[in-house]
Length: 138
Image (cartoon, rainbow, N blue to C red):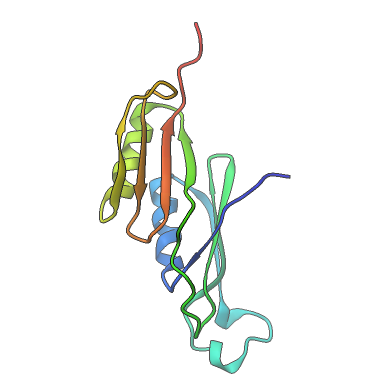
């Protein structure tokens, strides 16, 4: 069974998931709001927060939610989401899109293990490691 990241947001999960679907050309974007949950408490019924959301990115699934209504929750810290792209051009485009409004943690550049690698914290607070797959040996 694969390991999948499950990221929590402080009220902007819907916007973040839609952004990730666009950046990564994701498919199967799904979201369920706390207000729509079976047996939702009255305090949740007016909430636009996401109880569960997910988007398929390449061969993986990125899952996320907002903290429950009335809960601030902690900001994202101490982890990054790794995403490998098929080539440098794709990796760089994804890195640049994530960096728009975010913070570059490590510039995108060639390394000994990847022809294109960088680290960025996007405008939603999610830290990403973006890497291009090395060329196949000849």
